[in-house]
Image 1 (spheres, rainbow, N blue to C red):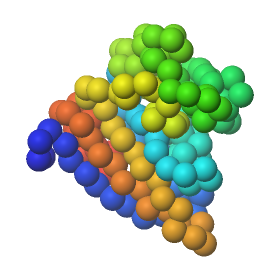
Image 2: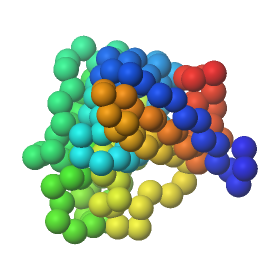
Image 3: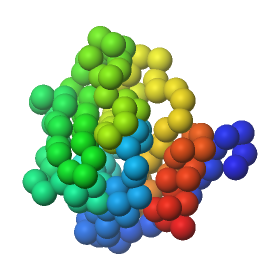
Amino acid sequence: MVDGTITVTVETDSPDATRRIGECLGAACEGGEVVLLLGDLGAGKTCFVQGLAKGLGVATWVTSPTFTIHGEYEGRLVLNHLDLYRLDDPVSQEGLGIDDMLGEPGTVAAVEWPEMLAGGVDGDRLEVRLTDCGDSRREIAFTAHGPRHAALLERALG
């Protein structure tokens, strides 16, 4: 780990494979994780969160909460799925009322378009950057910031 960060990159060749990687991550979560999803529109962020939810034991199908901003799903841990795409300007965590959702025990926060959070998200977190490589292929770069999320990557991706 250099400067408290570690990066692991994987490639997938289909939406199902992207979901399976998300599922591996979800199965390894213990609660309190903050997963920031980065990538262009259509890069596979929501697809990844669907797998994350499955790994967390969520029985319902996860959809993008683009118009409502927040979706909450019950599983062995609560998944707080946030999609900030529709925000016009960056806003504070407090202004959105999500400061209590990030890093809480018994929950996993998955945030699409975290760049819309004014000041960003500091502290122990996992950044997941999805890149569309064409033909349903995705490059997924995981960057763990801090020991909790570095351990998560080790459990999930070995």
